[in-house]
Image 1 (cartoon, helix red, strand yellow):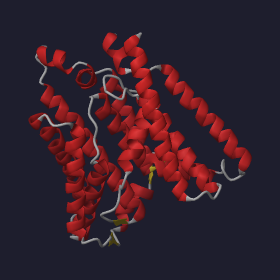
Image 2 (tube, rainbow, N blue to C red):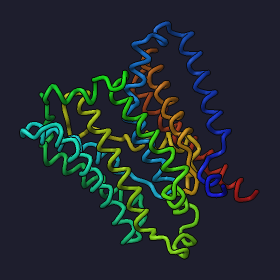
Image 3 (tube, helix red, strand yellow):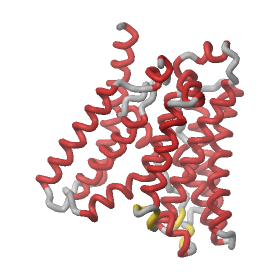
Length: 318
């Protein structure tokens, strides 16, 4: 019970985000009649399905007391390799598992480097983000890979269980993460890595294995997001996923996950992703420049970090 409490954020955070979402929906529905149209609702869900995958993985990473700045680059290189495999004649049934495995390997490299060198995750993943992005640029020479097999588009635009495939896959990941993070030993040890790693080590838990595993999960989810983006656009390019790690970090911190690890919130993260999607969609409908969208994301991240830090300090004092 104690471990479960440590893994959960304060419920007030999720409730506050939910209230903000409802207020935003009311405001946008008043300002524009097209907001609640079926087409727009579908657009919001589709546009945020891959962001939701990245945010779920980042929630686990930050809960473990680490951070991953290579998420967008892993997405890019996995997408490029998937497209190259398909263009080279490899079947869809083989290309996708290979891309997921490649994402897992890149995540494992991050985790192993952090565990073995004891260098801060910020520095390691910053370096590997340039490394993986560079591999994408070398592989493509900066030229997008287009005209992929029509059957591959099902993973980005097709229906799966009555919903858009990307949305369905994101929901399935959430369903799988709930027991894994909240009710299984893996979740307990991952959050303990962020809260009390020395105590975990003294108890005989192989912390390196769990440190690497959380980065492997992040890599696989990044690769899956890359597959969805590539299938939806029917092309892969080296600049795909640029700055997406910032969106993921912003959603995780806004959702109530402890900035220094030891506590995570999957519901809060999901709501925060939806809120950010609402804001982006609302600004687009209201014909606000994309430059302001970037500014607003930065402002939300700054506010979320400041609020999270004050909340942590208040908790330590209390």
